Length: 73
Image 1 (cartoon, one colour):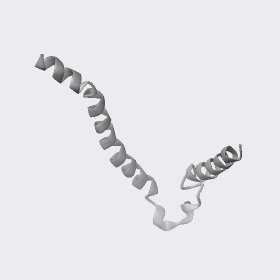
Image 2 (cartoon, helix red, strand yellow):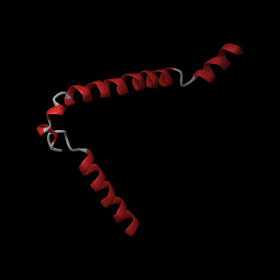
Image 3 (cartoon, one colour):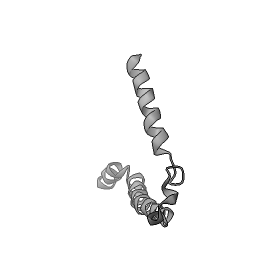
Image 4 (cartoon, one colour):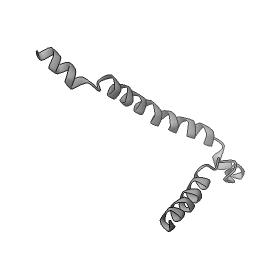
């Protein structure tokens, strides 16, 4: 029971901080962060596109062993 309570409190603290947008986190006053939205969009695109391709390849070839066994028979 205590471990569950500690886990819930820990998750709440971590996720409440992680969900803060740049404006909510107070970085809108910093002149160095004028392009933060563009930087985040590029970062997300660079992460999203390769993982999408890897996921498609895995799904496409998920029954590869079965196909190879059928061709061999």
